[in-house]
Length: 94
Image (cartoon, rainbow, N blue to C red; front, top):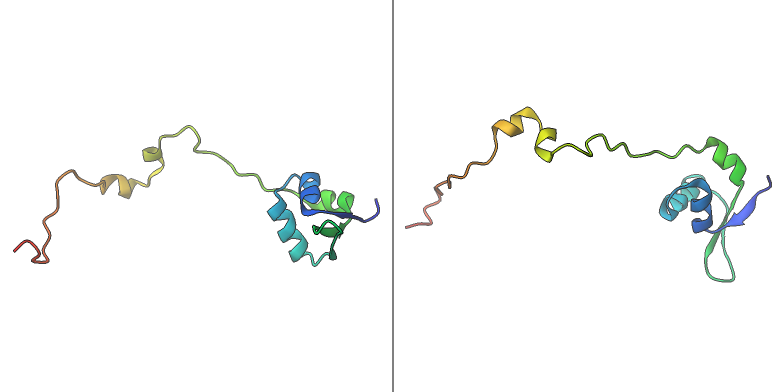
Protein backbone atom coordinates (compact mmCIF):
# COMPACT_ATOMS: atom_id res chain seq x y z
CA UNK A 1 0.00 0.00 0.00
CA UNK A 2 1.13 3.54 -0.62
CA UNK A 3 2.05 5.91 2.14
CA UNK A 4 -0.84 7.94 3.52
CA UNK A 5 -1.18 10.88 5.87
CA UNK A 6 -2.77 9.87 9.19
CA UNK A 7 -3.40 11.60 12.49
CA UNK A 8 -1.94 10.05 15.62
CA UNK A 9 -5.40 8.79 16.56
CA UNK A 10 -5.90 7.13 13.15
CA UNK A 11 -2.45 5.57 13.31
CA UNK A 12 -3.15 4.34 16.84
CA UNK A 13 -6.39 2.68 15.73
CA UNK A 14 -4.66 1.04 12.76
CA UNK A 15 -1.85 -0.38 14.93
CA UNK A 16 -4.00 -1.10 18.01
CA UNK A 17 -1.95 1.16 20.29
CA UNK A 18 -2.61 4.39 22.18
CA UNK A 19 -2.35 7.77 20.43
CA UNK A 20 0.62 8.66 22.65
CA UNK A 21 2.39 5.44 21.65
CA UNK A 22 1.72 6.30 17.99
CA UNK A 23 3.22 9.74 18.53
CA UNK A 24 6.33 8.28 20.17
CA UNK A 25 6.66 5.71 17.37
CA UNK A 26 6.56 8.52 14.81
CA UNK A 27 9.21 10.47 16.73
CA UNK A 28 11.52 7.46 17.10
CA UNK A 29 11.09 6.53 13.43
CA UNK A 30 11.73 10.10 12.25
CA UNK A 31 8.58 9.89 10.14
CA UNK A 32 7.58 12.92 8.10
CA UNK A 33 5.09 15.09 9.94
CA UNK A 34 3.05 18.15 9.01
CA UNK A 35 0.14 20.05 10.44
CA UNK A 36 -3.20 19.77 8.62
CA UNK A 37 -5.73 22.53 8.02
CA UNK A 38 -7.57 21.43 11.14
CA UNK A 39 -4.44 21.98 13.24
CA UNK A 40 -3.83 18.28 13.89
CA UNK A 41 -0.49 16.68 13.12
CA UNK A 42 -0.46 14.25 10.20
CA UNK A 43 2.14 11.50 9.84
CA UNK A 44 3.20 10.03 6.50
CA UNK A 45 3.23 6.28 7.02
CA UNK A 46 2.79 3.03 5.10
CA UNK A 47 0.30 1.34 7.44
CA UNK A 48 0.51 -2.13 5.86
CA UNK A 49 4.30 -2.19 6.08
CA UNK A 50 4.15 -0.94 9.66
CA UNK A 51 1.56 -3.56 10.65
CA UNK A 52 3.83 -6.31 9.34
CA UNK A 53 6.75 -5.25 11.56
CA UNK A 54 4.76 -3.96 14.55
CA UNK A 55 4.06 -6.34 17.42
CA UNK A 56 2.34 -4.55 20.31
CA UNK A 57 3.48 -5.60 23.76
CA UNK A 58 0.71 -6.86 25.97
CA UNK A 59 0.78 -6.63 29.72
CA UNK A 60 0.69 -10.00 31.39
CA UNK A 61 -1.58 -9.98 34.41
CA UNK A 62 -0.15 -13.07 36.09
CA UNK A 63 -1.10 -11.90 39.55
CA UNK A 64 -4.64 -10.85 38.78
CA UNK A 65 -6.36 -13.29 41.17
CA UNK A 66 -3.72 -13.40 43.90
CA UNK A 67 -3.97 -11.58 47.18
CA UNK A 68 -1.38 -8.75 47.41
CA UNK A 69 0.28 -10.38 50.45
CA UNK A 70 0.94 -13.53 48.42
CA UNK A 71 3.02 -11.54 45.94
CA UNK A 72 5.31 -10.04 48.58
CA UNK A 73 8.78 -11.54 48.92
CA UNK A 74 9.35 -13.84 51.87
CA UNK A 75 11.56 -11.34 53.76
CA UNK A 76 8.82 -8.69 53.63
CA UNK A 77 6.33 -11.13 55.13
CA UNK A 78 8.70 -11.73 58.04
CA UNK A 79 9.21 -8.00 58.55
CA UNK A 80 5.52 -7.12 58.62
CA UNK A 81 4.68 -4.05 60.68
CA UNK A 82 3.74 -4.82 64.25
CA UNK A 83 0.84 -3.30 66.13
CA UNK A 84 3.13 -2.23 69.01
CA UNK A 85 4.12 1.44 68.90
CA UNK A 86 7.83 2.21 68.73
CA UNK A 87 9.21 4.56 71.40
CA UNK A 88 10.92 7.60 69.96
CA UNK A 89 14.46 8.17 71.11
CA UNK A 90 14.85 11.81 70.06
CA UNK A 91 14.06 13.26 73.48
CA UNK A 92 10.90 14.93 72.24
CA UNK A 93 8.77 13.53 75.10
CA UNK A 94 10.53 15.51 77.86
